[in-house]
Length: 63
Image (cartoon, rainbow, N blue to C red; front, side, top):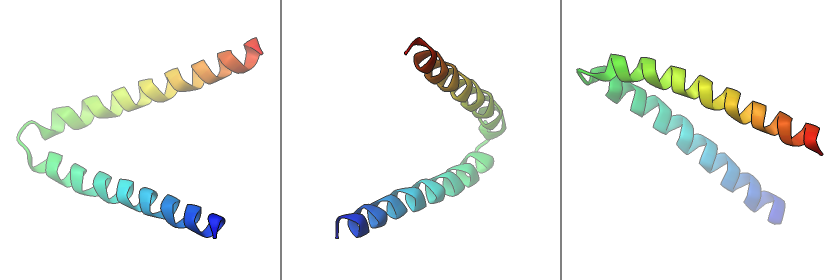
């Protein structure tokens, strides 16, 4: 039951995030300032991913 509950919870969270991404993107594309925001979000997302990766690598190398 524990594994089943965890799996259902994980599936619902991932589904919710996917739907939020789809509907959020559609909403931003309709907004007049949406294109600028979408471009900035792409850059910010890439920078956050790189920073998290570098942080994890640093912690792993430091022991």
